[in-house]
Image (cartoon, rainbow, N blue to C red; front, side, top):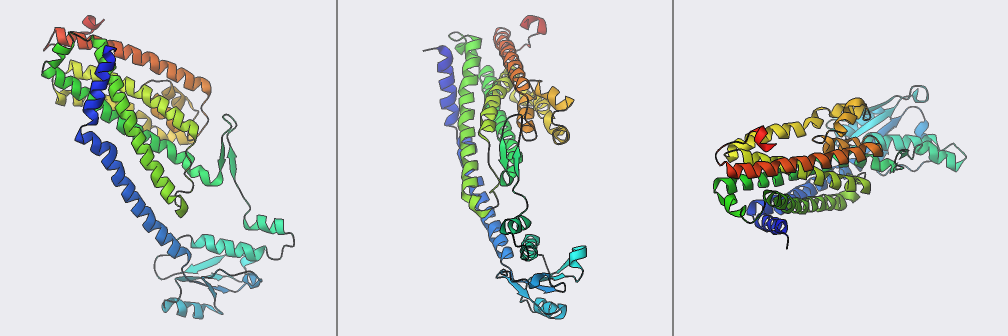
Length: 391
């Protein structure tokens, strides 16, 4: 059995049994799922109550006099005084007035005593559209007047088709993926850095290195904790899928539809990002003398990796502009930039391919440097290796 595999299995088994990991990987998602279900249920109840809240109206234009089925919660009043009296008595949550010149101006006034019911404008729009289309003899044309747009967005570069109710999910999903992957990567890389610092401080690494080469040890730690990160991601994605599935019927999350190509692309970049970030953290752990010092240095790299968030406005404004393209080809920023850009544009295949190649090459270089730092940190315990020694 390969020695790196033994190290990987040891790291995976050791950390997956930790209470802190079990709490972060399983306890926290379950808590978030419970909270989200409760919140969405309360919001859905409020929306349902607002949609069915009694609403009055006064029609001075005659537009609403058509033989159109009136919503159950709509009540007609002969004049504004009667509508105001019903509002003061609490018989209606509000009332709207269709002005006499509505066909020329389109003006409608809505009156309420407290918070306006949610989506009341949609209900009024639908009722007015139904009345305006009642005089149209062609049923197909009348249906188009009531619902003129059934939007379907087609991205020519990648052939993706997005329904009107799925546009929301296309923009939200990348941000969810970036947040999850960044949190998981930092957590697992933190385990790796802490493990290196602890083994170095306790002189355990000096014993291990007699039977395992520095490269095998580093590779084993990266692979073992990478598998741990995949477990955590799987749990978080399952929790997110559960929240979406349980609340899809409420209409609040009806537009969330995660494209399969985004999932595949995100997983590929997560693995590349983890190995690059993890190798850097391992090198920091090997060259520093304490966990506090290593975390201070790691914070600098964490800031560098978060640069795309400071330039996110450019992704909205010009996702194929010079800055987003440049950040796509820089290994330390590529993972988040590619996932975020995918929400706004179809990234050319050559940019993704070149980005992946550059990340792989950079990761190999960083792993090689970190392995040399491992070796020199053991041979020169208590001293920091110079750049000439590492080369």
